[in-house]
Amino acid sequence: MKRALAPARLRRVVRGWFDARYISLADHRQDIRDALWEVQTLGREVTALRAEVDRLRAQVAKAGVDQTQVKRWDDAHRLAQETAVAMDRVLQNEVLLWQAVDRALEDQVADRSLGGAA
Image (tube, rainbow, N blue to C red):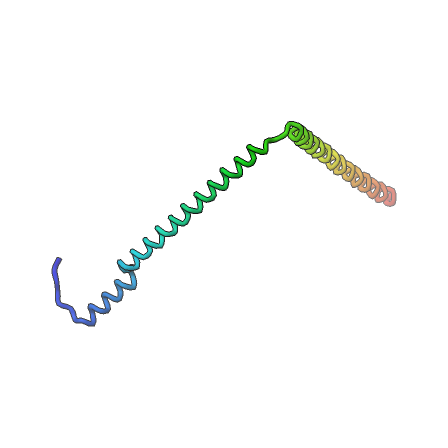
């Protein structure tokens, strides 16, 4: 590396360009401190959330689930599925019905146009 004499004004311009382009060491250290603080804060929040999840799991385990409730839930689920299948069939039949009505109307219009032309 060689050193060369440069006017003070040129050195200020070059330093200003470098300062504007790159982050200073002090700013970089502050950014690292801020990031570390954020990580520590998030770590505390995760720890608190884990404790809450453990508390809720213990509460659910203590309450237990009654077998009659499970049977009712299973019945409700089965009935919901059967209802969905039945509604699907009803909607398909409705579509078929309206298609038949449309065909009948088209045939009626076609018969009128043929009857009127003869």
